[in-house]
Image 1 (cartoon, helix red, strand yellow):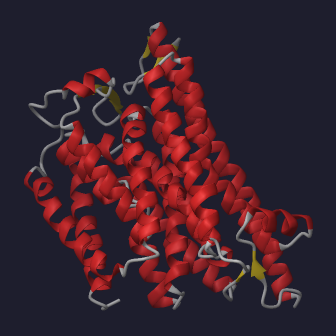
Image 2 (cartoon, helix red, strand yellow; image 1 turned 120 degrees about the horizontal axis):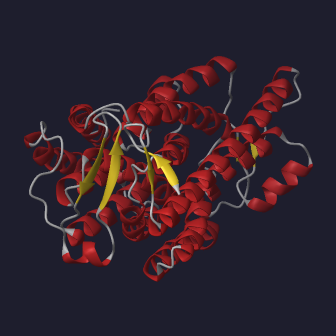
Length: 424
């Protein structure tokens, strides 16, 4: 098989590389297809929603928050149900990506990752159809009042959030939640539901390009997703029992402390003196990526697997508890603990945050916290911004990404502290 490198030359790949490249293209195609289909359905529902609204045929509508209600709403041509169906396609995209990855790893004859990926899929399905159904509310929820100015302002704000999120491995909730709650006075639960949608939209929109461009380490992502999905389920369950105030404060303080090692190595383009952990070799985690800026193929090692895995469980726990992507913590874990290059850390974080969010999205959906009038413009805006961010990252350096990531960490940490102290 022939492929084009970062410097424009054509090289021939060996049989093993050929199969791996097919795996990457299959996964990228699933993500891209899910995004395009969801956008088409959401746009159709939005047009229907506003036509009915401004002709006086949409009065205090409810939106479905279970699959049977969505299906019956679709059969009746209900606009909120159409939008919800589009959002569900988007929410299902990471799950479908995991399912297809099992087949892709089977094609590679990699039994280890067939088992790992099957475990991730089992955790996701248990969360969505088990815990999500158990915590669901008995009656449909009411759609918040939505207007065209609201729609376009939220879409523009979400595009910015998606752009930054795609560059630094976040889901965009750090921007979206304050805007929705402070500017538009959206209920906090609905803002958190929209944040979960933004996480999955950022992940699906950006990861499709990152996987295709070979910037994402698929095996690192799939291995660590075992920890993040388990953590996300535990967090979503605990969120029904615990007051999140103290958690916001703890998360903010932990982020500030965790960022210190990154600040100390702010000028480091690539990690130096990194030795592979013994598990890294067995799990085939070391890799390479094409750096379009330097026109080189960059090889890297993977260290401290146990620390990275433990930190990913905490990241998943935070995601489920607070309704955020916890991408900052994921990037810090991979960059600081596992010593991956910044580009690999952010792109692999983007690859993972959608699956982490999907583990708790079913719970938020069936609790009626994902309002289509709010989540739809968030999803469309984030997808647009994430696509632009994915095109930008290949042209910047690891140092530049770190310089962008550090102030974003500070913003996230201060946002968490302010919410915990009741200032927001």
